[in-house]
Length: 293
Image (cartoon, rainbow, N blue to C red):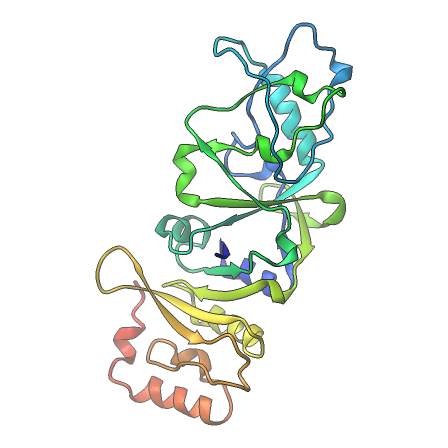
């Protein structure tokens, strides 16, 4: 099994340049992120709360809470604020063929799908997101200094409506990340360095521009990263995954040139460039193969 990230071509290029974003909880697109229902007992002293939270995927026995208990919204909001100053989260998926994620996260099929080696040390401590029908209830006494701090993975639950994502997460302290600016919502952007060896393949979307395909090809042609195209299949709501480059450098094997991929290689020197030019200019399927859907 691998981990996957659906991303815009721009983000894909940044990852190939060796950096990847770890996002703070308050910058997520789901306001329920890390916001369970917190029960705040009357006899709990605020000084006793311990918000030093582990990042690993650990088992933790939560104190049962009666369903009629009144929970504290302020405590939940304060926790998200506190965590957003401490941690960044990398959100990945275990699913490689999601139509919804191609549309939502990969720039409406103009982006890429990045496949990662799940066994690489970069993903140490990753954990699956559980999808539940009702928000998790947590007794704030579980945070008291007399007990072991709660792992962050216990807080990471999502509504069943998100289950199509099959999400896998990696959490790191912002102390190990580098701030490089802010996003369009003025949230700080924190990144970590990621080695190319952690990347297994890049897949172009149905609408990835030729310009971006060429830029990505230039970055990976001398690497062991595989290159593919997720083209619309001739039937059903599914993709046809066409291999463009196998997981070997260009010096060992030429890419697969066809009417759909020929434009990527038009600027290459030697036999590869000549084959690409001939295919692009002479093949009877070139025009229809490159119609944008």
